[in-house]
Length: 615
Image 1 (tube, rainbow, N blue to C red):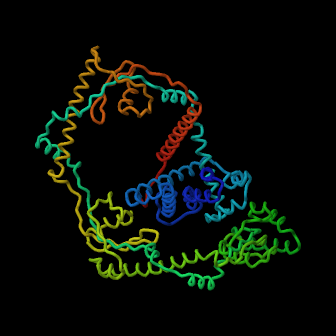
Image 2: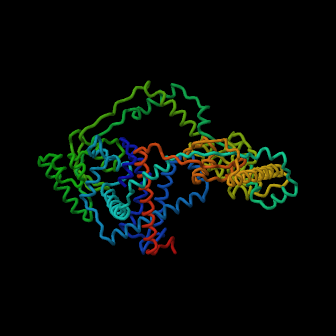
Image 3: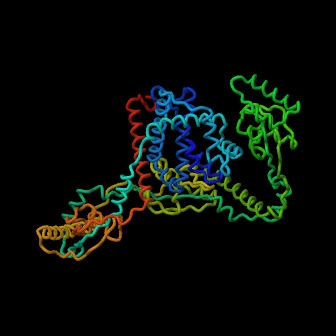
């Protein structure tokens, strides 16, 4: 897990948090490792259950990761249910693999000590500022992710134990220097060649295609002439942004709002908190007795920071004298929050119970709380009021749209009248080629749904995101089918003409090749010196040159014709850069490690009893 955190850590807490969130699915099975469950299993591995909830959480995290990586493209892909099912199945297989690794680690007696976990956290760059462990940063990341320190350490224990096993099994892979160097030298080769191109275009004039030939091709290749399912729509689209453009808010309205809500325009008050923590554990009474004893010690004059170092069970903040972080009101657990914001600077609270345990909370410092001038926030208030009025109207119209399109399900005319929206239509379109104005995955999915296509009724209100909604209704529907021969005949004739011309070009190229191999002279005046990944010359000629032995010759198909290629010489790489050799070594090492890891998982699966669902 820490390696994944490290990959995303670029010096800001936000990036660390983002990477942790989208990759946190690595820990979704932790609850099933730590306890039993009676819910429906997603899979059972050697008698141990992977709960459906663990799969669902991992699946949602994986979707979030892919959405972050692919952006808007993911919405388009996610409109395909088969694509989402494949993602979910892949996530389940990873959870099964993790379970197998955890079971194997347990069988081998692998363990990770508390000290190892602590050291890993202290040394993790994502939790450091200027190369040193930063407890505020650490606490902030965990707080943003909703982790408690104990649960986070449990997750780390599982992950580090698993990595112990993986490193032992696949960490022995290595790449010999000669391997990567040999590949670099092969990639750096150039080749001298001669060639002649026989284009098909001159042969086209002498080619004829009969109606019978075209019809025969049509009959033999029906899959090539499938017309996709198409639909044309009537639709109503409601947008909060469009409504906002028509809203007018005066400066007087903004000033009135400012006067009535002045508290909203104070700079946020922040308080620097410190605490001494006693975890609840299994014996709450003992924990309460311990925190009361600590409180008595403070009341007796003991220094808060020193007591935090010696007695707090939050050892990381304890090492900092109990200091946590700056908090705004409403961020922390309600009991903690209430106690913190009731204190005077420098004071500490009586013992407070939260979901984390018993705390003694100290207010170390505070800042903020100043009133902002109206002039400084006027533009923000104007925009806020404009958006609010537009949203109020949007939600009102959305309800009217939903009610009317449901009450009159076989027409959108009444819904258009009730909302004042323009009823628009589209031409026929296929699922993969929607018009730009309705190119939204959710809308396209609804347009081709059973409710719209088969019942002929209005769709439900479709949420398009960013306060945009729509309702659609089928205007015309064409099922997928084979295009009539008359519509595709011209294209078939063009294709068969090209094919016949290519055959003629191939025949001539083969004749030239035969003459060359027989020792006769042919026109090979075109010469080139090409590298393996050279694309200045036709790729088919380049690829053929790297398949031939010196002195060899062969013909090769091109986009519009054929070529005869002769290889004259292989030139060794002029210079192999050390950086290239190192990059290739790393790539090979990664491939070897990945192959070994997959082999390990397949081997464990072969020996295990794995069932999916409630089999």
